[in-house]
Image 1 (tube, helix red, strand yellow):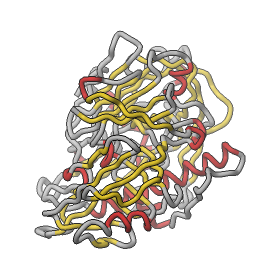
Image 2 (image 1 turned 45 degrees about the vertical axis):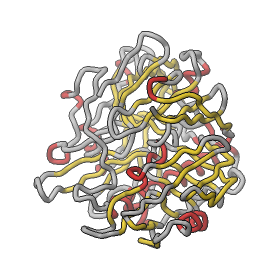
Image 3 (image 1 turned 135 degrees about the vertical axis):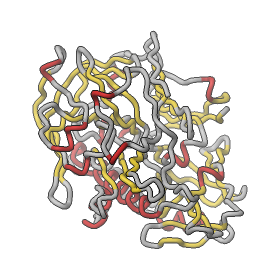
Length: 449
């Protein structure tokens, strides 16, 4: 898998959707990394076990992580806006048990970074007898400083900050990470304030704030604010990713700063002020500075977003089941850092009511099942083309070994995003080419080739 470095100001990144089979649950050492420009990582498996069953335990962790992520996003918005929240949105209390699950404190099965905006799991393979590390995010290499210091980061449209470990970090978890050394960069500047995330169990992640040059696939941004973490919990040790690069809008930034791509657009570091995602099991791509016509069929269908909310939130959506419209005139948030799809319980219940044989599989976590031999035909539309979710992307696996029912990739969960908003993660994004345009302040959808 290649991180392509173009000669122009537009950049293309082909990145990984999983990291697997790292020996003894230890993340890859920075000293042993491959030359910059190449990232070779295995395929994504996510919530599907090797035997075709739904990985319920991991899904529970992802649920908790997503809830924590959006609680933090809304807290950031509230702080940045002087106390208010977007209309219809609210802070949801997350039980301590769920917070512990999201950070891998439930049998030490999973870890998280950057307040649960990306996750890595430590799973024991009973067949091989080895620990297997899997990653649920979209990851690639960036450089910070002059000369550039390399970091493997998660590209997340559902958050807005850049975060990496600091060379001053003495936590055990930092020993396997690439670390930012401000004294090694001629363009580094200390900024006022500190970066800090407090968790419900009393633990925290914190560090200093800097500004420096950030380069992603040939796109160079000057004086970009980011956090260099000096305190990192041991639960992060097995995560092969160093940090996160948020692609949302400034209003949900913990740092109260413009995200990297917003800065790139403002500094005219890109010709076309847009980035695009092609997500698939193999050869996924993030294109910075436009689109890759080789991956989609014209036309691109653009729909406006209200960037003041901080999210890539598209209105006027409708959903059909079996060709029949079930719900219409609702909002959708497109989030590359979320694994499946979520919606308010009443909306999700109404959707599954049109799926023959569907029933609640786990009421506490909002999972539904359906007959495996009749995967529902579900499509989204925003007033134009209908974009169908493939059976492979909607089916999360059988509910038990040899079961005739399968788990669906749409779960019922109140994330505080409003009663008429669906959160669409990778289970949706893999079905269409996505363009995130700052110039148009819109998300574009196109049919895949």
